[in-house]
Length: 218
Image (tube, rainbow, N blue to C red; front, side, top):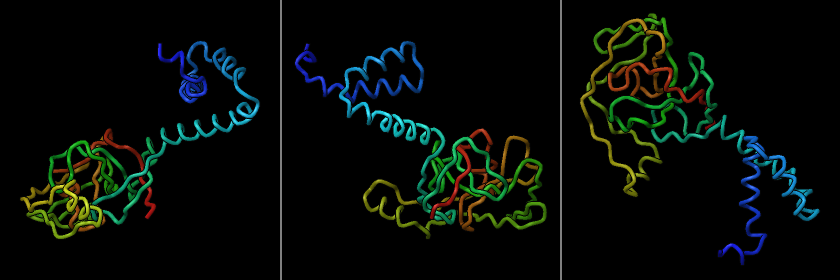
């Protein structure tokens, strides 16, 4: 086998990674494998091992609970957000969720989106023409066609590189009014031209699509 001539030190990163996974998941026999591994390491490596373990655990725990998100549109007043995975935002806070609506306005199904959680179950959404109100407070006007005038710096650069397609103006159907049912919320952008719950393409957002509360970094 080719591994017979490979120096032992080249196997150590792979073995250590496997053992770190053992430590986290507590796979059967993990304690015995740890003892054997530590016995084969030089004294300096044994002194550094706790720091390696601590760093690995910190990265692993952080990845389970936090995420960094880039906002590539101008629909909200943020460019970079920190997502607290599994947390439920309060009314008025930013929420990150998986878009399940139609492919329109630069949003594609399965894409992660950040909006303001503006309406919760039990709130009444009133519609007058294409104007919306939440419990008497204005939510904005739903345009008849999408606009393409505003683009973020990131979006423009992606289009220049050919990694994103320029948006086209398309007809927009307004959402209906009524009481927000359980398991759904009304979301808004901070920009009046944002694609949000005012439009049927997005509509009410299911709570089970939430990624977590989002916090603006800048």
